[in-house]
Image (tube, rainbow, N blue to C red; front, side, top):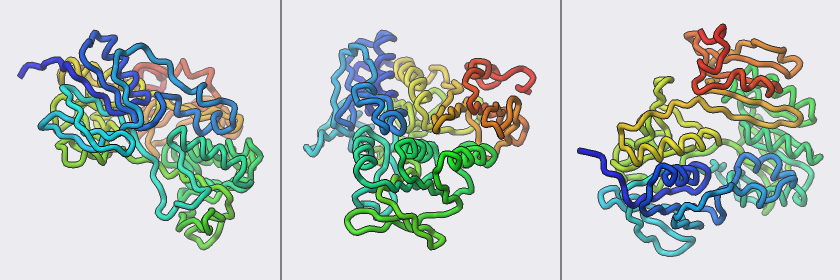
Length: 401
């Protein structure tokens, strides 16, 4: 059956992937009806700042708002998708606490991202997750008035960034994680050891190798109970144990769900025609890695938006998304940048500098010796030399084989 260009497109998710997809649709000449649905009450903004400059107060909410073109779109904020009927081609939406209502579509772009995981029973005052600007507002206020002792559960990048920010505010800070070093899950043990030294040198206490059995308090949190029986006293607790795809509204719709919305290489969703996904919720068949991949990074969401828009307009024959993206983190006085898709079991080969000085470049390699990523630790001036449209193209020729 020949592909028919949709005349009514709905985008569920109004953050960076949804906004940039809408812009790409218009830029590609789409002149049909366009509806952009966002669960938050605000327009798209820069999420990476929430754990850093926004928490410190160096930037305000107005500084984070992303510029957007005149999209000639129906923008519906404070609205979430609650159900998808692929047979009728309708998304059921709910505005605030109002009744659900159907939104018809010919083409649907799913870009609703993820939501922060929570620990059971963590409903005490002073316990926070960090995913939205509203979350950041609540945490920022508590860091100033809630007390001087901060405990962060989770040693991923969000947890580490909050720890660095809290220390920058002069607060007593403890970082807790069941793995032996911070960042081990994303960057491996060797890089994690460098990160551990960075935190320790800046006065952050590390409780590594410890799980969390719960939080304690009466109305307001007073501490975090560890699996080894220890207690970390805390006036403010940040739960940074990762995120999960916001895909519950897609259950039973026919759209294939497996670690997010499962997609072909060009981001067309498996299980239903006329549907694509982009950003944190998309788990797609990566054409070069040869496996499904879901990436929770800002730049990936931005770049996927254009591919998803093209696939929605051109059909499943549209080209695959195979861009190698990067992510970065600012911790204290250090900048960490990663190009590519390294795994925690990949081997890190130092090719420039020395980890002891915290100024180095490393190449991640898988078990076949192939490069999977590049780590630049306080070496931002070398980024252009390792950056390319594909990982192999971004590596010096002597390292790419």
